[in-house]
Image (tube, rainbow, N blue to C red; front, top):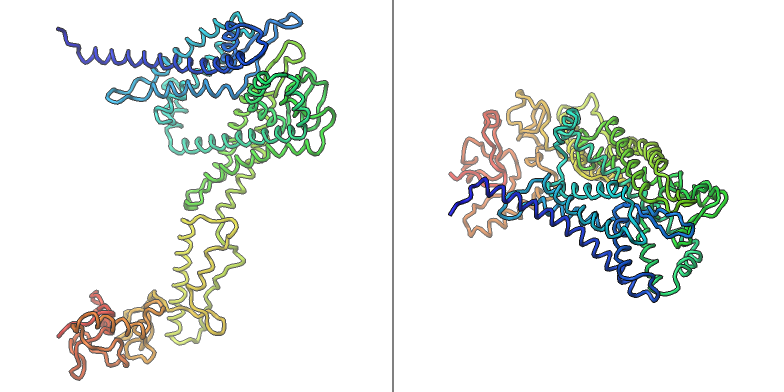
Length: 617
C-alpha cells in the first residue's frame, strides 16, 4: 500500500474546501429561488382565474428572483406591441439574496474544527461561482416567460452584487479588519491605512455617514406615511381597484410591502430638494409639482402631491435633510470630544472639520447609490423616467450635510469641551487675603487654608474629567466644594476647616516642640490653644466623647488586659517625654496622646499612633 505524503493531503484538503464553498454558493442561491417560487406558486394556486400554467409560473418566479438581484426585465406582451422594460427593483426583495450570499461566503471562509483555515480568495471565488451558476440557470429558464431578463444586466449589476455580498462575508469571517490593502494598491494609501489614527478617523466618518443615511431614510418614510394618511381614501380606492378577489389583493399587498424602502427613498429625495420624476415631463419637489405626471394606479403612489405650487406643509419636508446633517454632526462630535476622556485627547478643530466633510461625502455617496436603484423605467414611453434623480440627490445630500453638519459639529465639540459650571457663577468663594498686621499663627493658618482650597479644586477638576457631564446641570459638582472649605458659621459665613496640609515653609527654625502642621513661634505642646488632633478632619469621630466611648468599649472587650488610662489628658503639659517610657511623678505608661518629638521627626522616625497605648515599661 502507498501512503500519501503531507503535501498530497494538503492539496486534497484544499480541493475539498473549494468544492464545499462552491456547493455553499449554489445552495444559497437555490434557497432564495425556492422560497420566492413557493410564494409565487401559492398566489397562483389561490387565484380563481390563473393566466398561465405551472411552467409560466416557474418562469415568472425566476424572472422576479433575477429582478431582486438588480437585473432588468422586459415585458414583451404590451398593447402597443413594443417591449416595455421593467427595471424598478423592489428593495425589500434584495435583502434575501444579499444575506444568503453573505452567509455562504462567511461560513466557507471560517475554519472548521480540526482543519486549517481555507484560503479567503479561494472561498470568495468558489462561493461567487456557485451562486452565479444558479443565476445562469434561472436566466435560461425565464427566457421564454412573460418577464424575460435582459442579458446585459446579468453581468452588471447582478454579478457585481453577488460578488460584493460574498466579499463582505469573507471580510466578516476574517474579523472585519481595516487593512492591510492589496499589494497592487497605491503605496500612499497602504501607508495611510497602516496608521491607527487614520483608521480611527475613517471609522468615525463611516459611522457618521451611516447615521446620516439612516436618518434620511427614516425621514423619507415618515413623509410617505404622513402623505398616505392624508390621502388614505385614494390609496384605498387604488388598492381595491387593482384586484377584486382576495388572492389578487394579497398579491398587491405583497408588492406594495416590497416597495416600501423605495417609497422611503423617494421621500428622502423629495425632502432633499431635487424630488423625483413622474414621467418624462413631470417632477415633484417641495416647491410644487410641475408638468403632467404619468402616475400608474397603485396604492403607494397616492402619496404623490397634487399639481400646482407647494404649500407650507410641503416645505416642511426640508426638515429631513436638516435632521440628517445634525445626526452626522452629533456622531462626529461624540468621537471628537468623548465625555469620558481627558480634554487633551480631544480632536483639533481641523480634524473635526475633516472628518465631518468625509462623513458628508459618504452620506452623499450612499444617498446617490440608493436613489439610483430606487427608481427605474416602467415602460418605453412617458414612464421611461420614473423615480428619484440620483445625480441630483447625491450632491444635494452633500450640500445639506456639509453646510449644516460642519458648523454643528464644531459647536457640539465646544459644548462638550466646556468647563463644568459658569465662570461668573462660582459657588466656591475665593480665599480672602490675610491682613498685613496679622499675627504669625494667623498667617500660617490662612496659608494652610489657601493650600487646602487649591488642592481641593485640583482634585475636583481631576474628578470632573473622568465623570460624564450632563448638559442639564453644568454646575453639578460645585455644590459640595463649599463644604470642603469649611463649615458654615452661625452668622452665615463659612469658617475655614482644619487643614490637613502642613503649612508650606514650616521651617527647620521652628520652635522646639512644634508639631508638624503648626507654624510660628510657640506653636507646640505648651500652647494653651493647642489641640492634639488639629491635623485630622473636624468630624465627630475624633471628638473627645467619641474617643472615650471607643476606648471604654475596647477596655470592656479586652477582658481586663487593657491598662486603665485616660483617653485624653486634661493638661497637655503633663504628657510624658517621648524619650522616657515612664511619665512624671511615677505615672504609668504613656497614654495614647503621646506625640512625636521634634528630634524624632527631624531624624525621620515615625510618630506613634495616637489611638494606641504607648510602650509598656
